[in-house]
Length: 207
Image 1 (cartoon, rainbow, N blue to C red):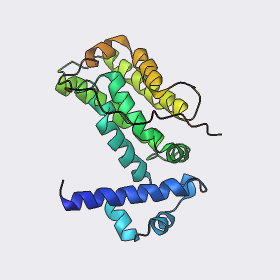
Image 2 (tube, rainbow, N blue to C red):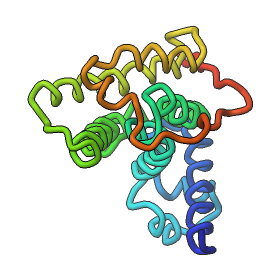
Image 3 (cartoon, rainbow, N blue to C red):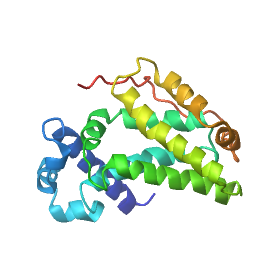
């Protein structure tokens, strides 16, 4: 990774940290780019070099979390492994996601996430697995996305008092059977189990 990419990544993390801190006191919809810049100690020009708007902060982070985990399901990871890596990353930003999730904007994470996941699962099936996309598989993909975007947040915010490992197993076991079987065995399995955090993430009880 070259220095400019490292610098860009570090600046995005700085912006994310600032927004994460601010949503503890200010609803995300009312949060301005100016406030984020002041908290991060950067200019608006620097912000817009990194993100097109404030919604892009969460989009970037969730894409990063999925790129390391869920988007590799059927490629290098099983369902449960992919889920664990992604949700462990998201768990580190629970308060931020809780704030962002309350927004109804088209670009908000609750609208963006299903579109991206549906696209990725479809690409894994059709482009990498060369599986024809039948109407039944389309339905199973939709059902899977609904499971992911509605049930994992419930765990993050304390609705299910179980470990992340157990929650990932529950969701994986709920995937429609045909789709589960098509993608649970990776095309290119990792030589070792995916890394896990030192401490098991815990759900947050957010009122």
